[in-house]
Image (cartoon, rainbow, N blue to C red; front, side):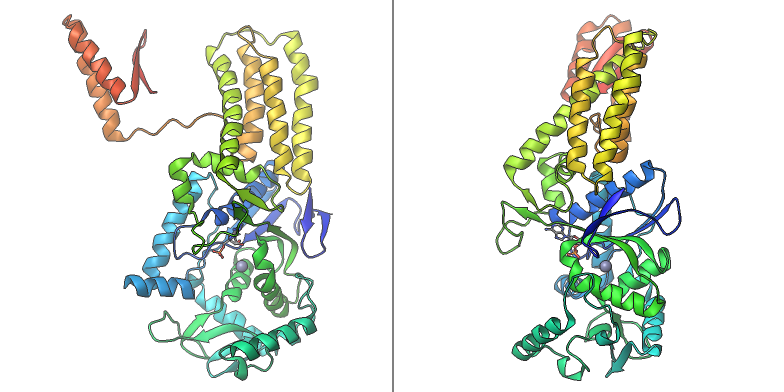
Length: 478
Ligand code: AMP
Ligand code: ZN
């Protein structure tokens, strides 16, 4: 597989540190509110990367953090008059619900900054001991110029950064600017202010800087060298640049071999912002659309390209998904017939010579820097192929083979279901349905057909259809 590496600005063949394994770290959200539709893009595309690598046989260790200590969380906690842990735990739980709806699998580990403080302190101490960091008045700063590679990811020249910084510091009088050795130095540990969560450390009672947490947690849960580090393109500078400086200065080894960054999602071609009123949470959009439509929409573009979210585009995603679902349904119906027919010679011929071509082309698209847009086009072509080559005379065994291939590519790899999810029925509701069916059976036995019909209508009003079969009464949601 080839991956576009932000570090080298080239597509490179993916070679993991350990053959057959892949350690991936994805910067996760800051949990002070429901996640927005932009946050869903890295979640969905890198979940798809993970699924694809697993499909190709890799054992993937997928780590994605929750930033659970941060100014925004503290502000929200103060507004609501609760502890900041209450806010972060609440929105971690809400984020996990959104992830599940979007069919984003839980990470192997979801570390949280507040639960890793001893390791944070250890890395800060290591950096101080090696001369890469210094403490002033309880704050610890990273000595940026002590790391020769600074700027390599964002392709920025350190002297240009320095002059930009000096102007900015001069104009804004950035606090703490005068206690730093150099305007480029950034915070590893900061002392607490009144009402902020804090932990004891050798330098002050305080909390870790944001950049530090990813360096620490990726090392702990993956190792000193990651195979892939990913996140949105806004994180390249300064977040990822600073992560590289901290990790490589502390560990004396390459921090990550590949860097993947997703492009930004805009709303109606504008940057999403609360003040413009075009800010949408995943939860809000899921009220109007099946979350599968969102997943399909996100994957309908290659992850590095900018993506525009509009009512028209989401409608077209809905129609695209419908085509996949209809294709899946047609095959499923032939499979369900269990007609016991042998696979015919013509069918076998298609399985041997035609079907593998779709899989090959799908793989080629995914191997080309995770081109999910092309991969979805191949799925559409596969559906055209299955529609054209199946009818009521097809053998169920043949339809099953087609179904399995479609399932693997769409459902397993892209995480896009090929069959409609039946709306779940709660235990209470199921008990009520069963009781009504039992009552109807009894009514029929007593030849009270009026009551039996009444119950059928009652169930229909609940969205339940019943069928009398040889094995008894069966019901399904309509
Ligand atoms: P944050 O909570 O702001 O740190 O964001 C969590 C993740 O979502 C990061 O990888 C961001 O780069 C990404 N992200 C935020 N906004 C957008 C957007 N509009 N489009 C795509 N990715 C985004
Ligand atoms: Zn990070």
